[in-house]
Length: 401
Image (cartoon, rainbow, N blue to C red; front, side):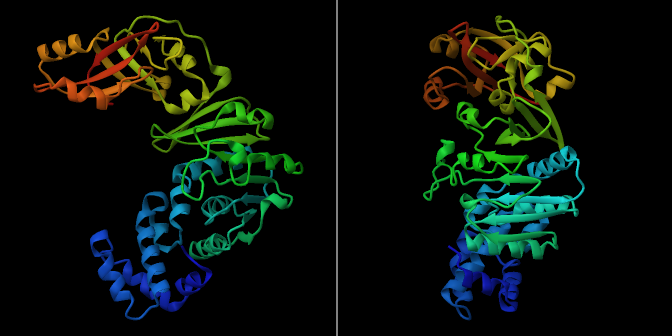
């Protein structure tokens, strides 16, 4: 746990020198005690712990912040909750593409260590960015991060946004979605601050609220706006409630290879139900959360397996612009699920290794794998799911896209 005194030391000339030394030391778990003992020869326990923790977090932060991580300051919780770097870039581009103004003010409410505020400020020098947070340690870190990265059009203040926020052209609101013990919070009214606080900000016409990707859409009904589910390279990262933009309805966004692909609710179409065909398709999780599976299936000439199952199948391998929204496995065979018959089938095919996927059935891979006891050189992907309400298993080639 950092204190303001810790930050004073880290920002001092001596603190900077120690951090530069630690950047070249082995501070892995097996060497931490040795390094901490060395630091204690000239630092207090608090200073030694703060510099070592900062060095450790800087190394962990490279995946999210690249070369900037070596200059920045973090708490462990703030780093874990920081937005994906591709989403930070995407969000700033979306905001400024939607904006019709050149100059104005952006407020980052709940700015933490300032990563989103700094991203907004870097994107447009014409905007003044104000970061607000109730935690003085994180606000100080945000200030230090802005200075370290040469960002001059962002300022940070200690403030309780529950007491109101200043006028602004745009507000980005990132409420805490974990308890002090680190457990996820699923009810938007138990966020800190609760989502309902935005109803008090009647003077703000445009805002984006960062939500947990598993948010219950029914909880968002009172707030209007548009919900966007964002995945990066097929991994669902976050949900955002947008208010005051020019598009409406649920939207799926997939960022792949640095390119953002979008799918709107109005593009959804119904797909028929049919028996498994040649290719099994699993939609991107952003499509599932936005409720747009049937539209993707219909545009790929696919048929659903069951009204309640998100898998669908196609006669040919998905190609073209719609193929980005799915992962596909070639189906070699399928049958009603019967474990004894499945094991016999796999042994006859010389299958010794399987990857098990499931959707809509109670069995788990951990339950099935020990009971199979397969031998052989072949590998297969087994997909346990339902077809018209009945349990089936599809035997597929391993995924190789």
